Image 1 (cartoon, rainbow, N blue to C red):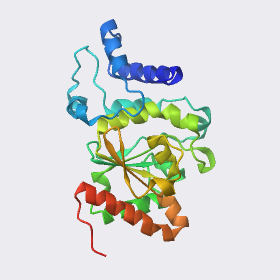
Image 2 (image 1 turned 60 degrees about the horizontal axis):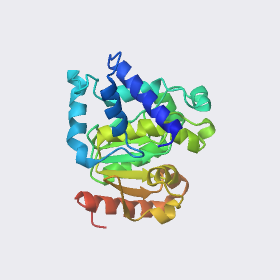
Image 3 (image 1 turned 90 degrees about the vertical axis):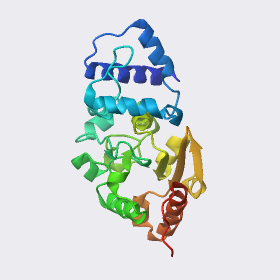
Length: 257
């Protein structure tokens, strides 16, 4: 892990501790926590039971063996709302957009960045592209409440531009912690930006789509962003082909065409 990213991760963790009401940590506890921080994407399904216990602790106020408040999505969301790492995004945002859906979802939809409607409402994928995503989810036989939806960054970039690499890097610590807590089995990357972010590749979305990738214990499917489909309706057939790959692997019934 690079030093700048390590500093951001440590800062985020200390803010978590403060949010949980912890004023100090033991040296031993600090060392163990630091060594447990993954270098990139933190989800490992072998540790799913620990993640589940941490999520349960949200309502009980349970502490871990070092007396630290256990990580919860609420703690991470609070930190995100106070984040000022990206000057331009902070100046441009109305509010942060953390994520929405089932915190124990098997399937996560991973988008690029909040747009105007998302910035106003504080919820990802609520504009026209979000309405199309909802239709895609329902065509799979699911509801939005069955899945979790998030983005590479939590603030709206000005003029709806793509998030810059450094902005994505600043948000990666939050993203990793968010995914670790949700502990999904599948992640569907919507568009080039999240696909390259998660797979750490420079390949185009056209080359990444159509197959399941394995990343840190997740099965990852890459497909076109709903906003792209609004501009290029003919690409909807490719997205539906991708969704059928996902549905078959998830054991969901695939409608006959």
